[in-house]
Amino acid sequence: MIDAARLHGLMAGFLAHGATPDGGMHRLALSPEDGAARDHLVGWMRAQGLRLSVDALGNMVGLLDWAGPDAPVVMSGSHLDSQPHAGRYDGAYGVLAACEALLAVREAAGASGIAPRCNLAIVNWTSEEGARFQPSLLGSSVFAGLLDADDALARVDGDGVSVATALAGIGYAGRQHCPRPDAYVELHVECGPELERAGARFGVVTRHWGAVKYRLAFLGRQAHTGPTPMAERQDALLAAAQLIVAIGALPAAAAGVLHSSVGRLEVSPNSPNVVPGEAVLFIELRSPQPEVLDWAERAMLAAAAKAAAAARVRQEVRFIDRRAVGVFDAGLIALATGEAAALGVATRKLDTIAAHDAICMIPLCPAVVLNVPSVGGICHHPSEFTKPEDLELGAEILARILWRLCRDGLPAA
Image (cartoon, rainbow, N blue to C red; front, side, top):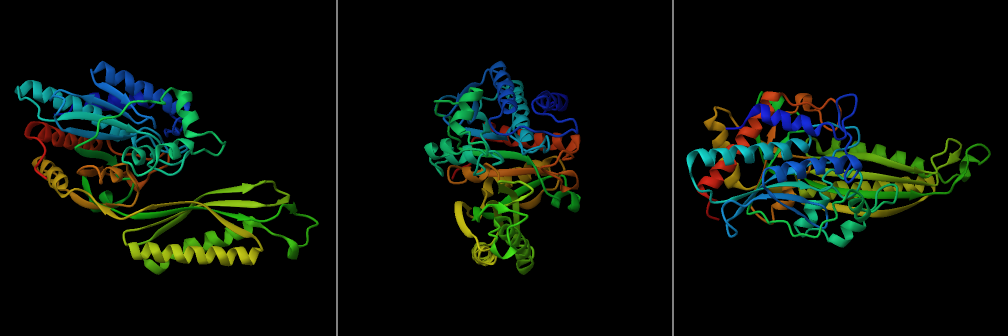
């Protein structure tokens, strides 16, 4: 159904926007590189006759409204923003595979003469990664009503630039209402090792882990690292170091069902001969079990209090983001499994520990995430790679799912 050469050509065209010399991608949300990629997508959508909508958060939806204004909308896509100096497949593959799948479905409908029963939409969500602006899933969270738009627009990056200012700077501060999906299918590289380890080429995500994310600051006092007596220092970084070690030790007490990290540390004034007066930690705890998340959060906070006391500093919680454990739609899981089987491909059922915009769609409509393997399980790194034949397979299964929904309509609730 899909045109493999067309898919790879489409993906190659987007690599120019933020490509790094080592084969990776640096396309932070609402950066000039992101703006250029968005412009490229707008050009493609208009060339294909799609109706473009851009909302207040810069979420972009291209609609093929070929079934009539009252027909259900089946949406597919992901995000074009990346982590710093990361990989070229995470997110962008889902958007571009959706583009190819739409073309394939439209061609199939034209060849068969069947009148479609659903409209198709392609979406690029704003700031999925959470690298520049927090929290992650920013645009889809606002779209789904999980986060207030004004709150999201006021979020700032490390340089104090707000989401609203950054959107205006690249020309994507929209004012439209994007179409609401009646079903949502997101194709993504796995960003993990399970498919490759199992020798599988295709997976469907049945459950997503929950997460608790903190931005926690230790506040001490700047001082000279030379003459200031050790007993009089209030070293914020010392407290941070102790907490990082404690957080890293938590998963050993909940083997297999807890992941923890401190992925970012901001130190002030960050000078070699100044005792740090402030250290801000970006903390993540992830688990499929709510009681484990609750325990880990309590343990983390107790460790923070202990570290603050030992270093004679204060602590301050500046931000908390919580995401509950959830499941994806059984009907779409069955449909994806059946379409893969029709191609002779077995489907592996997966959890996703990483967050995807599809999580925000669960309260709105049936939603599912499809995965193809990541070589070595590598993600958020320039060496991130998925074999061309697996990229093609994922796009083919996506196209067949969209074709079934357009041909037969959405299953009864």
